[in-house]
Length: 555
Image 1 (cartoon, one colour):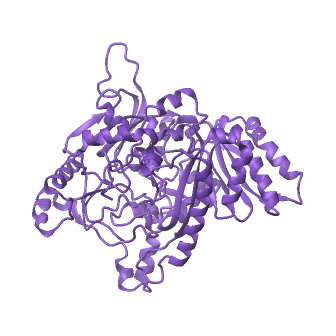
Image 2 (image 1 turned 120 degrees about the vertical axis):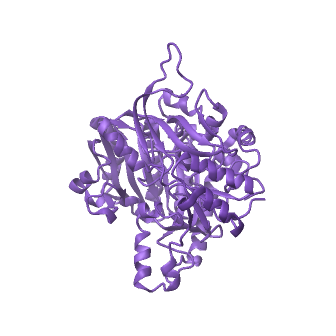
Image 3 (image 1 turned 90 degrees about the horizontal axis):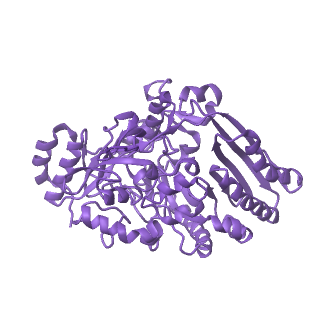
């Protein structure tokens, strides 16, 4: 049984890591002293910035989850600066039977990177980025080999915004997270990793060419399709913090898209009957959206409205408008039943990750990391702002097979209407791979992502959170009674969808902490093979996370 770091460990840890061994500071220290103080207000204001959260090993984007976890965190952390530091921390934990937590950016719904009662391995400083015009995976050089492709290699602590900005001058694009402060080499990609444009390019996992990883025995391996292929497969979808610690990840890159088209705005129905009819129209539209590779979300809820936040790249304006026109015209012909401000617009994709561009054209779209002045290139989307320092009342996801949209649209629509009576939810069109080009699907089948994702047109995500809520801080704590009521409503909604989608699954990076039959739900038929990989590369189960491969009976 792994244990926490104790005073007898400190001499050896200090000798090995020096100043890189740090005591993890409580990010709410001033608030615990006086939650009404000016110092506390400044402390909490700082935790509204996701990049500031990234830079504190004791701070997390999810502050807690009802009946799951709260303020637990590691007491000590190794602030790794090299791959050798990662290996040394792993070896110390293994040899001394100390628990090991792994934290990159702190983006983690289920508290897996908190490292409570463990030594925390913090990879934030490893943020080197190398752009390759022609990358050849290790071991792939041979006569006639055509495996050289444009690529980018990122360090373990790199944020996606930093990767996008590094590639922009080269006219290249990489599949990564929509939230700009999410880590590019950790749990995001190891769990699968969906971008806004998955149906064009595939998942992050499907675009990985090579991973440098430190395994449980302290060895640094280079894993790709030819070297350590079992480990390579497991690391691309099998879940973060489970098979090793990735120190570098190399991704294929793609030509930068030329244009981006959005469908935005809301449509509101005047009553429940009209809302049910609206949902039916949207569901029947979905196969066309799938075929044209539209991504992002449509929101539904008890307010009898849908909210469009959809996007596609390099789509002709006439084609983009034509796919939405039947729905918008149908709404417009019924002014007594519906009101709408929905619209279609397109523009250049260049400078999409440039904060100055947004300041010039749509400043309301972004929030600045202004700690380094108003010209800082770091920003996050306004739509992600409430996710910073959020407390989770309940959260769940479910892949919806493409066949339901095509073959049983009205049945699916009626279930979605029933769910909307309980709580708000989103259909994430980009978090399903069905409809992607054949070459993309071929790459995805070589990952360990749940096969349900490959057959899904969308991932439905439903959840309730309380923004800026901090357990244990008087005056700023989450409302537990509200959380319990909302959790019940979310559960009732998911019961309806699960009954309609037997055998489907849930996305491991955005799932219910209390997921039933999580092995099948997260990985489906891939789970037995993942267990074999776990036994091969981590036989003593050093890397353990909640509902991770091999965690049965341990978390």
